[in-house]
Image (cartoon, rainbow, N blue to C red; front, side, top):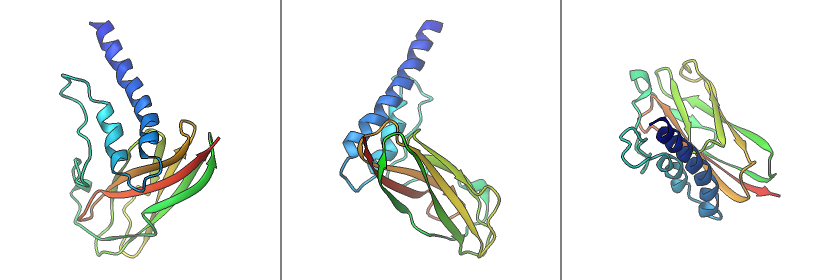
Length: 173
């Protein structure tokens, strides 16, 4: 039994790594990032495993709203960023500035990247009306070649959550 569980765990991890690299080739040269958000999530599914993660698709949230806070509105400095050409193995980051344009405090409850190559950091405390916060996405280019499109879903107490942030890069050898 332990041996079977170990084999399944290693298979899931292996599929996740292969999926991230395979996804790079599938999305190279395209403008869309829709495949990005589902490729990683579906790779973790194991036949017969009812605890598998349901993929995010069509822009609908599978997570609960931000801690049942009253809704507010948000303005982003941008929702897409292009790193341009970066050398393979470089770790880069970009800060997306968010402004609370509503009348209630803005609470960012979670930022979920579509791939393990991206690590988020974000303002944890409530952002008061008229004030600014930050969402930083850190990207490790070690596993990629050529054009990549990556995304992260931002869950907050806004009407159309999650908000999708995206970035592109051209990984040079």
